Length: 624
Image (cartoon, rainbow, N blue to C red):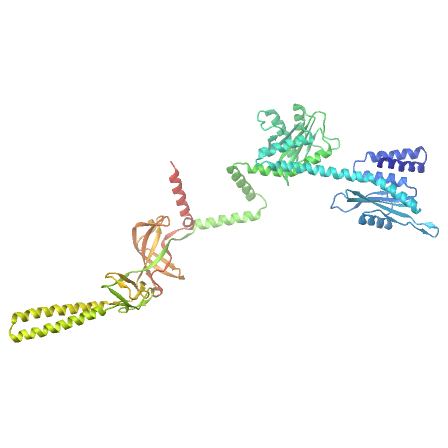
């Protein structure tokens, strides 16, 4: 219908122009419109036809936008070179804003009519793509309605142009997205590349599509459409790789046969591919990421076909997006050693090449630090967990059976020599002593009576019995004295708390307290078996206790126990050292970290010898 209406409009214009010259000019206008190659030429031809179809047309304008985010801009003005009209611009702006037809100037002023301004929006699926506006000589309201109707019919041509452009852009976008989805669908590179090549061949009707990636200075073929194995096609592979190298060296899309209006390009390899394998046209699109050429895609059409500009443009867009995706999969599919070598090579090129100042700075700093620690000596010290013990640790035991009467000391208390630690109940012993004293007095009386009677034998017997009673009294006195548990020397109670056991029975020999002296201590260090060979008696060291981390205590190695102890899955040797200085602050049972001074060695060796030792032992254990 739009075409018929336009013919009607043109027929009116033909009547206005009159004669064969007018008909010839109108035919030329329609030919321009039919052969328009872009949006600007089509809109200019359409506006020329429309304005010539209206009687009294003064000026006209068409505004469109290239994309959804682009602003509206004039694409055609009639007649060319005429100055703009503020009123026409205002009506056009109103039509764009209100998305409906806008009219201005339909009124009579002083027996004459003002110019009429009409603007009509271009809507496709409720999307605003632009507007067309015309300025006409004054006319009646009915005539204006007729012009608006005729202009709306003509707008259908521009709506068709916008709709075709929208569908073409969406179709191209869908094609590119489908190719990306195909490349992401497969986990491994070879399957993804083959699928993309096959998809391209099906989309563009190609006889064969090849995908290659750079290996060294040349492109290596990695995938063919509809073919998983191509190793036997040696001649074809060489020809395709030559075409890929040709496009990669020029960093541009290469067409053969070339276009008449295209730039000059080297196409020798493409000509050989076309000649040897009988395809109709060849297009090679390089795969790039920024300025780096990753590879190339070769598309071959069957005999009698050729590539148009839109197909080449779509291939370039697809290669721009699909190329990096396939390159990532190709890199991920490599062997681990190859990845490591590639990463090292890349870092080396960055290091010796231009730019990358930060990498060069850190590399130089690492070299300087490594040289410093490789040449400078430091104190080699063996570190080990340490605990504090008294040099002598005395046990205070129960001298007899009894019951606990009183407890005056417990673990942690500092006591002096002779202080009472605890006492046992001695009531039974005192009763026994009273009994023995009474028995002794009785025997003494009998002995005196025997002497008085002159019975010497009986007196001697009683004298012996009296001595036995006195010995028993001395024993009881000693036992009474032993009910008081005394500190043997100035010490700290290491173990023992009887305050919660008053009245409890104890047996002879039970350990009730353990005490350690306050003036001498020894340090017990657990030295790892890997370091024990460097430890010798007489070496010095330092001790830092958990309770006194800011104070270091001097050590002297006194004894090395030749028997290892297993602790937490590791073997340790017990090394005893004597603590020097700050004795008054020390207490048995304190723990910390001790360091034994060995000698002067390289700092690099000090920090790496354990790792080297572990690697050596691991290799030795696995080496046949």
